[in-house]
Amino acid sequence: MIRPLLRYGAPVLHEPASPVAEVTPEIDRLITDMVQTMYAAPGIGLAAPQVGVSLRILVVDISIGRDLNGLIVMVNPEFVLREGMQLEEEGCLSVPGFNATVVRPARVILKGLDRSGVEREVEGNGLLARAFQHEMDHLDGTLFVDRLRGIKKDLIVRKIRKLTKAGKW
Ligand SMILES: [Zn+2]
Image (cartoon, rainbow, N blue to C red):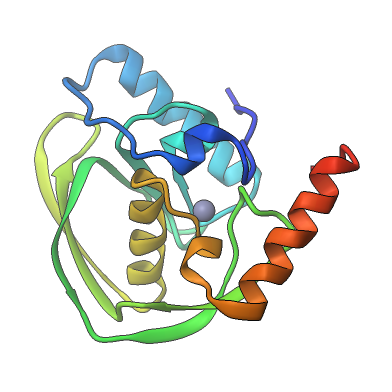
């Protein structure tokens, strides 16, 4: 089931998510919905708070379904390693229509549970490292806009405020 995506300003997007106590059938259904919602958008990653669920779950597939092994599901993910730096344009399904250059680590290793509840470690470089860091930020209530500074940030926040007032957000 494709779930509605929340946008910047929805409270659940701006608060830290809670750990998942156990990977139950209900959590598994949520993960299925998150994957479907991500592919339908289409996007390369999605975090549970973006569909209104304040739990520490992320899904990432930088191939957007083209690579059969591309899908990564992480429950209660934690950083094992973050190193290097990359600077690229980035967007977010919860901030549609806006892009900005964001500083991210070049390499990330995450540790967490897969959807069977088995602990796994996954390494990401380049775009995958960026996607991991972006979705991990969501689990802490941080959006890419929050990582910007100065004029660029003010501009986006002001435009979103205007759109919200006009009922177009
Ligand atoms: Zn996002």
